[in-house]
Image (tube, rainbow, N blue to C red; front, side, top):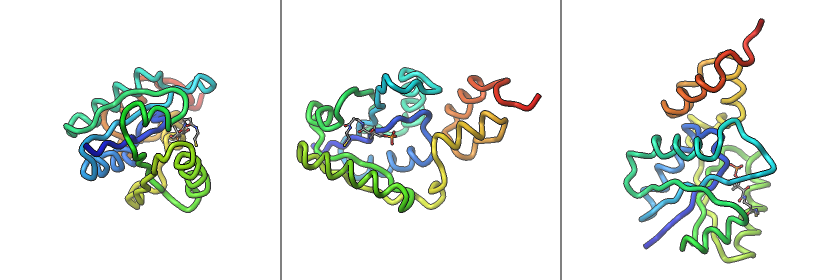
Length: 163
Ligand code: PNS
């Protein structure tokens, strides 16, 4: 059984994340999308909400499950029997930090990182950008799963608009 973990903050998930998860699901028998519980950083969405949105958005992939993790990613991967982490690389600007983490993770526990080149359609996308555009009333529906667009509208209604 080849099992991989797609970790992230997913606050919220974008079409770029979903593209990586979908491609990983074709490369591995099982893919666990795992949301980092970061007590130092309150997000726009709770961990429970992020998981709900990811579950709905990945419901078409029978070999993808969604959960959360806390602590070191390598400890979580070992506990779940996954030897590989899958991450998307959008641009060279992602590379420095991703390389550092990948090298640390292989050094700590022999957990390998597989980088997938982000589909150019999504190379400009980030959760932060999506939140900012949505906050000011911009249409983010082309860039996020339908469930995320809906929840963003609900969460941000009335926030950030001029006046
Ligand atoms: O979506 P993000 O915020 O870029 O995801 C970053 C994530 C969750 C992959 C990274 O912060 C992480 O692995 N955190 C868990 C703590 C950990 O293992 N830190 C050492 C990394 S070498």
